[in-house]
Every structure is written in structure tokens, then in C-alpha cells.
Length: 235
Image (tube, rainbow, N blue to C red; front, side, top):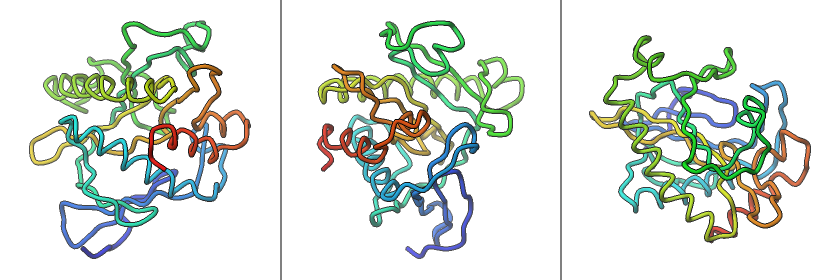
């Protein structure tokens, strides 16, 4: 496998072409951003811990029969992944009230949600990722009704694997986002699963172990990522 030209550069990851048109090299950078890029920083070691964290979670999901884009890690900060035709919606699951849900509905943070809340958002930084529903997705052709059903099914399948995994490690998986893409006629989980894209709280103290530490200037961002990783058994 030979790493080629840069294909795409996001806020914290870069994707590079390879000599195989169906594969990409995904690089996790040390960049951190919040509020649609308004707040930015470099956090030493962030790329490495996120690459390791993502590999661990994706492998757990694969073992549970949920196909992901991960092929294999390549080094500390890079992984080889399948090249997906990404669907421009985010699937969000909320197991506990927090963040924008609490603000929108006037609900205190920390309320366990049973059943979990599922939401769609349009992946568009310029529009601040607005909430959308099935009708928007169908009307504007972002996905078919069959693809919507598959994304919902797979998202709840992911939750059935990860929610107890974090609970057993003494943590609440408060909420997270997933992104899916098309690959060889299948809907496959893509993007990443790291503390950048989910909320993780200590089950007893409710201490935040995710990117909210960066958003809210709580400090010890990378240290908290490592604590979450260690509790899951990564390190």
C-alpha cells in the first residue's frame, strides 16, 4: 500500500488516496476545534490516542457483526480504511440528556433517557449542522428510505454494543454521533468513534472524559481521553 495525495482535510482528520482506489489512509491529527471551528488548538498526543481509541471501538463493533470502514491501523496516528461514498447526515444517539438537547428542550443535564433519543443532523459546518428528519433526507435526496432504515437499525445496534461496554467500565456513554457511507452496495459505518465525537462521563462523579473538557475550558483534555481509554482496557 502506498500513501498518495491528500483527498480531504477536516477539522481533526485528513484522508489520503492510496494505490488502491477503494482504500484511503485516515490520519488523526493533534488539532482540536469546537463551535464549528471558532475555537482551535493543538493538543499533543491527541491524534495518537484518537487513532487507538477508534481502532478499539471499530474492532469491537466488527466482532459484534457491524461492518465498519476500518481495515487496519498503520502506525500511531494513521489507519487504512475503506473508501466510502459518505452520506451527508449524522446519526446521533442520546442515552443521557446533555449538550444541545438540554438547551433546546430546557432539560437538566444528566437525566437518563429511556428509550434513548435518536436524531438526524445535516453534516454542514457552514449551516452549523442543523437538525433534520426523514422527510428532509428523502426530499433532498441525501439517502433513500431503505438507507434511512438501515442507518437507524445500525445506530441502535452500535448502541446495544457500546452502552454496556462503557457501563461495565464505570462510565456513561452519554451521547455520540455516527456517520455512514455506501460501499459495494452496503451501508457501512465510517468516520470515527473517539472522545471527540461523543460524551463520556464517570458514572459516579459525572466527571467529563471527552471533548467537552476542551469546549468548556476544563483542562486535562488528553489526560481524560487516556483515562477513558484505560478504563475500557486499551492501555
